[in-house]
Image (cartoon, rainbow, N blue to C red; front, side):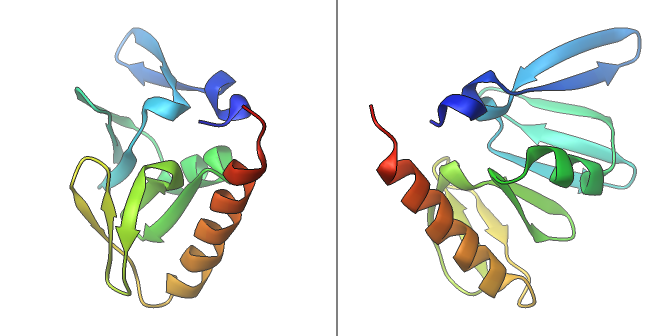
Length: 118
């Protein structure tokens, strides 16, 4: 994982409780009505948030593949024109209108990770 991504956290407010979620732990985010559902390896967290604001905040590590999905590019195992298969074996839809941008984002994130020093 990228060092910058390791330090980034998302502030999640659930009722009176505030939780900090490490960005690298989020596999993908799903939009359900006015709520965002964070999909982590061991749990899901649901809270009120706009996916468009999360998209801005989490760029360039996350990409909006569809109006309802924001995917952590570092968790993408493979993809085709219709879907991205993640390391947890879930398949996320890719909009035909966003596929070209998604491909460019994958090339860029892969190139950035290959040039990082261990």
